[in-house]
Every structure is written in C-alpha cells, then in structure tokens.
Length: 258
Image (cartoon, rainbow, N blue to C red; front, side, top):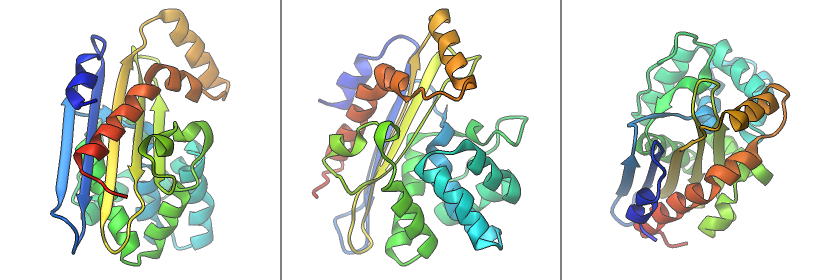
C-alpha cells in the first residue's frame, strides 16, 4: 500500500497526515517523509505529553513531584497530571523550551491557556521534535531516557496496536484521541520512536481527523467522556486501521531496517 491509496480512500471532510524522520551520525543520510490531506495542522490532544514531561523536569525543583505527574501523563495519558505540569511551569515557557530543544515552534491558539490539548501541530513537526527527544536520550540525557522508557510502557487500548503493525515491539509509543463537542470528527493520533543504537533516531507519526457527524453517536461519545469511561475502542473502530497504515507506510518510505 502507498500514501496515495490511503488518501484517496478518505471520506469527504476527513483529514490525515503522516511523517517520518530517520537521522543519526554515522548512519545513512538523514531522510524525512511527509504527506498531508486536509488541514495543515490538527489539534493533537495527548500526543505531546512526553515532550511536555521532558522539558518540565528542569523547571520543577522537586524531582519527585515532577515524576509523580510526568510518569502517568505519559504511561496512562493522565490529563490531570499533564495539566499539573502544564500550569505549574506555564504554557508559554513549556512551548518555548520545546522550541529551544527541538527547533519546532508551536503557538497557543486557544484563549484558555489551561487547554494543553489545543495546541495545533503538523505531523512533520511532531516527528522532528520526537527525533530530538530520541537523540537526547541516546546521547545520555537521563530525563529523555526516562520519558522514552515510559513510552515503552504504554500498553493495551492506548497503544492502538502500533508496535505490532510496525513489527517493532520495543518501540516507544504515545497516542492521542478526542473529539470536542463542537467538532464533527474524531481525532486519533500516534507517534512511535523505534529502537535505535548509537545516535540514530527513527520516528513515525500519524494524525487523523475522521468524520463523526451522526448526532446520536456524538452525544453517546460525549456522555462516555463526561462519565470518565474509556472511548479508545470507538477511536479504534473509526480510525485504527488508517492510523496504523499511515505509520507503516511512513516507516517503509524511510527504508527502515530493524
């Protein structure tokens, strides 16, 4: 399968992006692939939580307090713990620190700064930022190493079968999923950092926004969210196959070899 086949099969109104980065001193030439159909940027919900965890460590003097919030933010995608980090350090400081470390700049688009999930991103930007995280870990950054180790613990429905699809069981994975009440789509996203040696980093990313226009389904979904129930299975039904296909094609285009 190729990107064109995946994008041609999208429903009207759908958005999809994929990107991959492979780079590292002493390895093959750096390679980047990216494709997009629909909006240039999408809200990514939980996809950036590991990056938030990485840059906030140096801003919170109490290391145990940082870890108490950062680990569940990554491993189980805890919104409450992510918000604690986000507000303790400050959104603009966090986003500037990500820029300083990765070269990727993300502005605030929402009037409520507590809405950490409202940051809008492009898949290629996410891949670039995670490649920087991966290379920092490989170079000995202990916080980056902890964050990647937590990403390797993401499991069950929250992993969306990404490792199995990529044939890379040791990958660090983070997925995001949500549908705002005013949206007629469900957003489901994933990033995978593949196992590496030396300073080589390989990252693949997929962002999707699938139409979800049925009013009854949207109301039921929203009720489940408000009740604190899991909605990953609905995102799997709507977007799981597309998400994994975008990732696997990205990896193939990078010419990745285990």
